[in-house]
Length: 305
Ligand SMILES: Nc1nc2c(c(=O)[nH]1)N[C@H]1C(S)=C(S)[C@@H](COP(=O)(O)O)O[C@H]1N2
Ligand SMILES: [Mo]
Image (cartoon, rainbow, N blue to C red):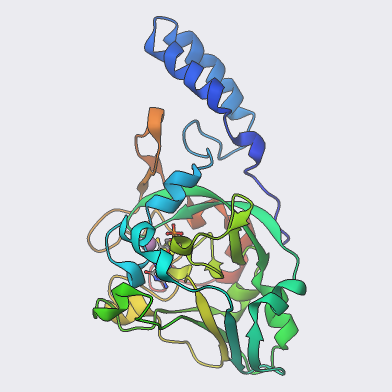
């Protein structure tokens, strides 16, 4: 099923209106103002709850990151990732493909359609954002490489370059960072290879120059700064699963009914929530059920977490 956006730029509350509303709510007219805001929110569609679907600011998205190659603190990537050289960039595509090889990213980008996708993004740590990505569907790249009939999974690897990635000088993870998808998940039209944010090149801290975005899965599946894509017939090892298989499954589909062993996944904190920064309910498959449920028909989502 091709992607129909449920979040648009028209969902973004103009800054002036937002400020004005803040003042109204502070004052005696609060109840009236809230009523009219509620109306506007409903017009946005079924997941549009005030304070939930507003696109995050560039500043939120680029200053609160997980990218352990640059440190484990949320602000470490913004501080440290400037050292990464992202041009030239080569992606090795190998394994069960007809045309394996070292592909220059610039050549890849000439052959794919870049579009904008505004997606909800949910970290397994129970925070979330709404992010306007630019990128192309991964299925385009895999089709260019030529998928062989025995392929069942796609494995991804991040760059290993401790000279430029200060976090790789410590053994916080077994580098390089690795992730994987089942082939049907990789081919799903929602699965994006992101190259940008807010219409500009991807900032280094967000995984420049090429990162995966799988919006119905927990954020750690969305591997950054990819240098290798391998088609295989066996389920690949993945970094967080290797670190703690009990806590981080291979699937890691967003599921409010399956808690992390150490915390609930029923709700989440939207970063930069501002006025209405209270927790919001987490949506099954992060709100993308209509596009992805058929891939998991008959599967026990608790056993295959
Ligand atoms: N290579 C690599 N990719 C990574 C990570 C990482 O540490 N290293 N962190 C993951 C996690 S836990 C999350 S939540 C997202 C964060 O993406 P963002 O910083 O663009 O919001 O990146 C994911 N991809
Ligand atoms: Mo995450």
